[in-house]
Every structure is written in structure tokens, then in C-alpha cells.
Length: 170
Image (cartoon, rainbow, N blue to C red; front, side, top):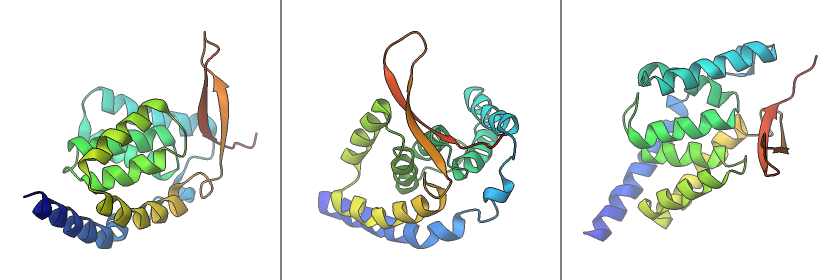
């Protein structure tokens, strides 16, 4: 039974790998990203508000856009939507890809989620998906989107967290 499950995962990941580039919205590129920081933040806020309001289809559409701009929190939440099938059909390989991309910004909670998700995905499938993670990283990662990652203090605490943010020219 376990052996069959591994082969099902492998077959599914290969099918997903070949269709991943086709299903990626190529029209959402840097040209579609708002030029002003305030507009950029409004788009991200609208995506997160839709998610919090349980308007999953709307949230999925908005998070898909903001995740492609390189916004790490959007990438994380898009991953959870794929994992739980919210606003889209459940797609564990895509959840894995977006989670790995989000982890360019180190976050303890996200690392824990990756550890738990990795228990569900066989190692050989994880290795097969690494190629897709790199494709996405080359399109939507920190370097591809020109993000600046740095440690910042949490308000009211001495604790530091890493934030990867868009570089804005004033």
C-alpha cells in the first residue's frame, strides 16, 4: 500500500511539473505590479482581507497576483490555500512549491509547516519537485523580484524577524 502511494505521488508530481508552467499566469509580471508603495500595500491588504473574510475564490485570485510579485506572506498564504483546497482544488505539490518559495524569508512558523508537510510527501517526490521550486524561484523569488531581506524588530519586543520587502524609489 505504501509503495503504491509513493508511485501515485511521483506520477502526480510529474504531471503537475509538466503543467505547472502552463497554469502559471504569465501576464502577471513586474509591469502589472503597482508603481507606488501605497498601491502595492493596498493590493496586499485587499488579498489578506478577502482571506480573513473567508472569500476564498477572491482571496485566491488576489494572492496569486501578489505572490507573483514576490510578496512572501502572500506566497505562504497561497501555499496554505493550495494545501487546504480553499478557493481552488487541493494541490499539495503546488502548496509545497509556494511554501518553499515563501521560506526565502525565514519564519519559524513556516519552517514548522514545511516540516509537517514534508512528512506527507515522500522524499523522492520532494526531490522531483525541487526543479519546479527553482523555476518559481527564478520568476518570483527574492532575486528575481529585487526584494530586500533584512532583520527587523517586532513592535514591543527585542525579537528580530526577517522581512523581505520591495525596494521602493521615492
